[in-house]
Image (cartoon, rainbow over all chains, first blue to last red):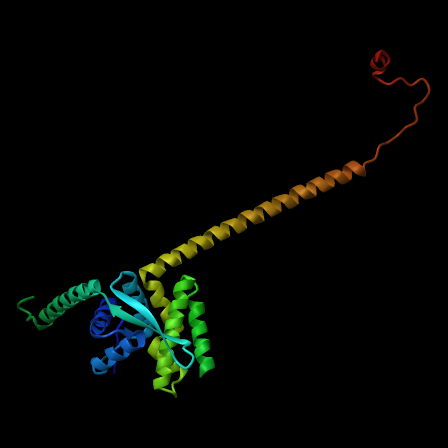
Length: 114
Length: 137
């Protein structure tokens, strides 16, 4: 069963990572997180949108609107990773690796060490 | 299904009443596009399915209001509401005061115009108490 992600920094990191390779719209980001995690992780639209808007406001990603559909009435907002977003992503990945290794250390520590 | 989607979007919109209108409209347009993309892939999708993918209207509003920017907006809205409440209370007090003063004025005017005086015929040989002053005048 897929685990819903609520942690903002994880959603930020995964979204920015996916935008590194191509411009995507929100639903594509949600789908890719689910498929690339082999169905383990799931992000709800409600959690993703505020984060994307915040990243846009901070200039870490940029957005552009593209119309689609028969009459061009429907729109998709595509997000694009900016250079400052790229450096922020590096920072997030490094921080996440540190946290993961810290957690691993705690979980693998023996009682004598504590 | 289209009607259900519109209802869902309306519910989200009403839950996001504290968000700035411009931001809310951008979000709703964005969400609509994503829902359309989902429906294209899953033509038989149901409303509960959409809610599980994109979130319930309440959950969406909550996650928006949790973000710093919208929390600030919420504070602005609540302080605006407080100011409006104070203004309404002041207006009520002024109206009540105006009503009381108006009533007093009307009663006073009524007494003035509808007053009466007791008249007695002056008897012969009667001299008013200040007759000297009248005479000298």
